[in-house]
Image 1 (cartoon, rainbow, N blue to C red):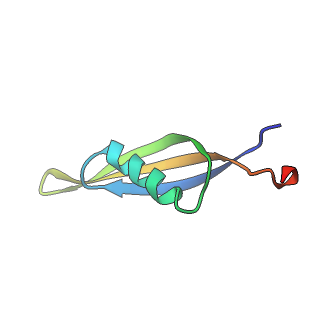
Image 2 (image 1 turned 90 degrees about the vertical axis):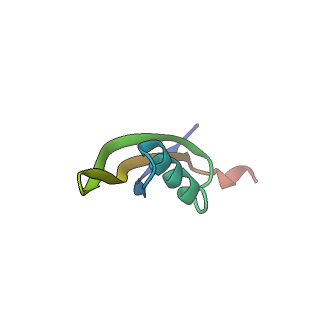
Amino acid sequence: MSVLKVIEILGNSTESFEDAVQNIITEASKTVKDIKSVYVQDMQVTVENNQISEYRVNAKVCFGILDNTNE
């Protein structure tokens, strides 16, 4: 049986939405193992001087729960 857990993470980037999502995955993978998917729930930008200054992403990261009973 497969059981998954979901956590919500906010990420940002000065480059792009894609880079913001990659930053979420990179940082989450430091403490979360077996990431299966990322659901982008919300995207927004901040603006300075009529230019996009930062891309922000609110995402849900889905990962498998390790089954320690088979060890």
